[in-house]
Image (cartoon, rainbow, N blue to C red):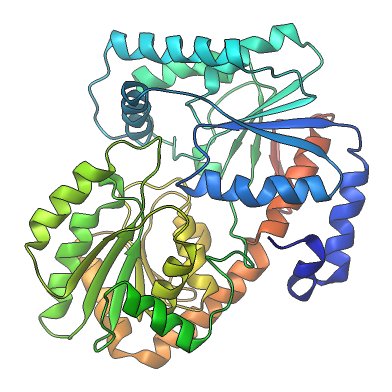
Length: 413
């Protein structure tokens, strides 16, 4: 795993020294991160990289993961979809199970640290422990697009959210009307991880061949969980429209997450629609397939992220970091990463996605320019070192006044 000096070629010595100086002001602070899984999904991936680097900066940081049953994670997935605004049937029994699992985890976890950092709704009820430790500061990190949430679920969660000292969102569009402090911090990718580090052409070829994807035609790829909100069926339809006039292959690649029980069901529906088409490759990759994903993205002519809803969509920054042209839905945090016609193409429909993919496949120079612009945009805004800086500033900012703080250079009250 990379250490702080390894990032100097990307952010300069001054960037690394700034992180060290900020961290010095937090010496002695104990911090705990809590989420719902150690593998699968962007939250776990970020914490896997961030926690060791915070430790290297001299902070006492630990990472706890809640325990839950399959029924519990079916409930939290329904909450996840509902908070994104998707219609869901939510019953009183689901709320009861959510509270029961929360109480179980409250009994097994000791959260007496100076800063308790809760990620997403699954562990949110743990905030009721805070009355045992009055000096602790509690932060809720929402990685979802809650701009238009299902009101029953939001109203259920809101009393817990209001007990935190601050709520953190990826985009200003997600912030809610609350008296508590709200902060805006975009997620990030680690440019030195196996998923994002440089690979040689022979390494890429070997990995893609191992996955059984021929490179005889341009490859169009979407890397995402097999999730209805990632719209893999819409990607299939867009690809079939493209293929009428441009020869290409489609790769839909994803992996399981322990807190997402719907993956196999969605994959089954996608497989049924693909109907054995030899030019459509469906890959359910095991955990720790970062090098394989890296190679697939580098081998692709176009990378798609056709989400219906999206908290942020780090696969977009991953693709842009590899200087690949991206076609993505204009939802959630994606427009922060893709500046239309500068670092990619934003779309609003299957038809729009098909048109954009064709445009990029037919104009390689334009596609190359978008990819190069995208890489520089990610370098400036969405690398892990910026994320670290924002979190250090956030920990410090909890001692100051203000309602809404943009930690990447802008502030609003």
